[in-house]
Image: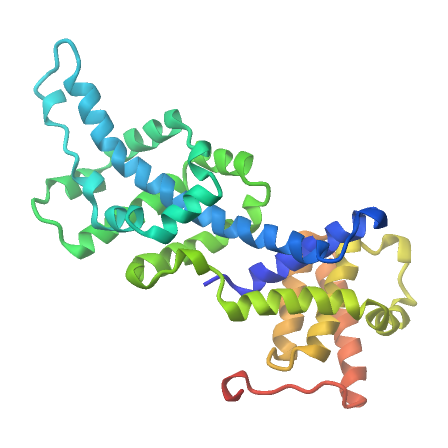
Length: 309
């Protein structure tokens, strides 16, 4: 569910944090603990988005009650449709024990902004898509799924207040934002198979921890391979993130046999472009490509077919 790219970002951030820490504060397990915190945040963000989505749907009942309790409610006030509050997907996610465990463990309910929830619901209620949905007397599975997708893609994702709320609430929201659409699609496709207590597969979690520890343990060897390639570059002008990405790339060449070298290079080019300087993509590409050629000439790169493993 969570991509390797997302995991690489978390490992990069962890390594960067470790490099900026005073050595006396670094203890055995510090790196892994930091990585777990960053991976947890991805899971927290997804859980919170689903919670927000459910709360927006449930606000139909809050709105209906508030209107009915007016001193002189109009006929329209007394006829507020609350169908979306009982949406099948909302009912399923709120009834999921793993989802509830995550809400309690991470205390996510405290982040809800009721005024924002109200504004999101009011925005939804004005749309033709919503009006068409509540006008349908039955609950067709396709219609139930479509309105939830609509709330996420057209109400939450496009609302600047909600995006600002996420940015203010979750430190690395920007790193995880793109991943949320994929996770939401996965959930809506097969909600009954979704395990909220294992949003990151064991394979991906193992990869994350192995990549982190390998880069830390093999740092000196990686630098022996990287430094000779930096002769034409001013060390003072090489971004710290670039160095970390190259170390990670070299480790994937040497110690992760199921990841094709082309995938490694392309991934770290993209990360350099996204998280470092405008020239970093080209720089990281050139250095990793040169190192890879040397390693291949020395028969040090062994790759296997992941599907045959």
